[in-house]
Image (cartoon, rainbow, N blue to C red; front, side, top):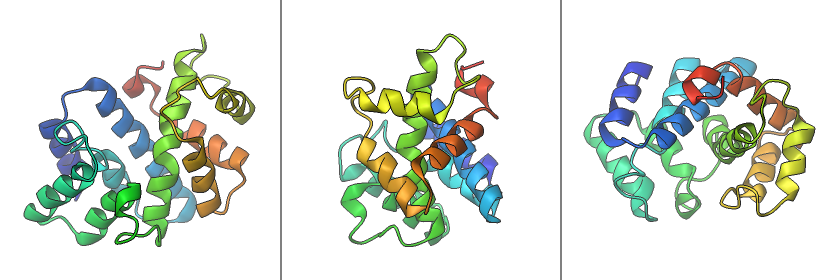
Length: 185
């Protein structure tokens, strides 16, 4: 699956602009980590784009991801991509564990991207000048972006073998490459 195919699929199943922006953020983070680790940037970016493509139609677990996997398989998408999409949801991790760099990275960046965007939206300078310290400060406020799992963000850093500050810095750097697409310029 290339970016054009992933983008088409995302837009076929997703109308909500916030979900599309989330997909673009996760794509940017996946591409960033692919570059850092010498992985296939196109493939990793496509996984980021489609990881939640089915959420608008099937938001409830376990349909979210599992119905999407059916769509992907029917379209002949490579099983590595399907498995990565499935693995980012807790309810699939017994069958699709976080056992590869692609799966670990998708899990690691999903919640982090959502949280960084939430932090950017309350800052006048948005992503400009954002630091891991400012993100960690907001993480301590459990009422701020309460739906975002701080535990998943910490687990993601651990899965990648990174200090939480380094992981957050990578997330910020990735999103700073696409501020216009995210409405954060």
